[in-house]
Amino acid sequence: MNFEESSVIITGGNKGIGLSIAKVFARQTNRPIVLVARNKEQLKQARNECLKEGASSAHTVAADLIKADDLLKFDFSELNPGILINNAGSFLFKPLEETAPEEFNMQFQINAMGAFNMTQQVLPELHKLERSLIVNICSQASLAGTKDSGAYSASKHATLGYTRSLRKELMDSNIAVTAINLGQTYSTSWEGVNIDPNNLIDPEDVGKLIVSLSLLSARSVAEEIILKPQGGEVAPM
Figure 1 (cartoon, one colour):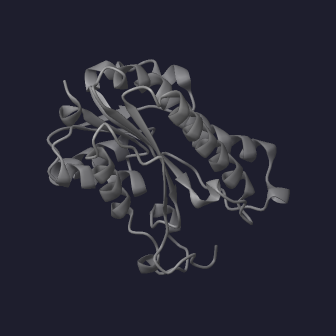
Figure 2 (cartoon, helix red, strand yellow; figure 1 turned 180 degrees about the vertical axis):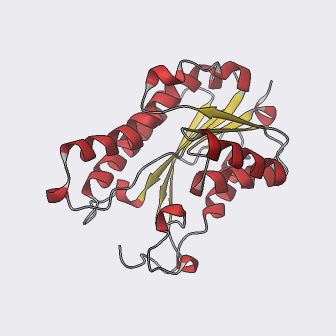
Figure 3 (cartoon, rainbow, N blue to C red; figure 1 turned 90 degrees about the horizontal axis):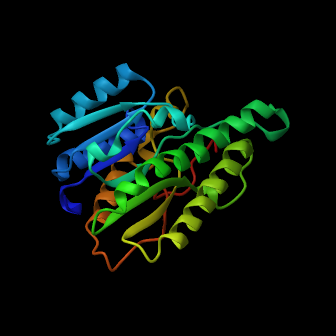
């Protein structure tokens, strides 16, 4: 198995940005697609959508990323991963003063620990290839504090810090590590919000960007990328 034939694993691939990324890979590559999420029904539907978009094959892994033991149930070597996209996340829109300790902790568990747990399981397989890629979906909130979403921002700072450290540790290996700091990107989380989707980042652009990263030679890596709406930040954020 070489890098070009390896699969792409996408966490949170059952909906939203993750599913959009998966669809782009289905259309533009021949890579097997592996979707990871908790909801089995949504995973089944997402898998069918990927196959309709042209995926050579699509697999699902129903697991809770914040439970390391849950991931141990799966043999990721059978999936031949070459690209891991840690996309799964949660956004809490609430002032810090009103945030409960449980809510603060859960933001860290989902946004930071989830990426860590998934990477720990897949990393041994990525080392086997002549080239492989880890992409962590971070946020513009990874770079600066945000009003009314402090817990989310803190957790995304942690995710970016983790990504930067992982890049340093794997610098002498065959594994490229990239952080994509996303601005406001249209997804299901925006449903019900009075905002024009056309003013937000097209989620498929995230997929196109990652496909482009996968085409780089082993001599190059994009360590950090900032992607924002063309018109800048959109209210009410």
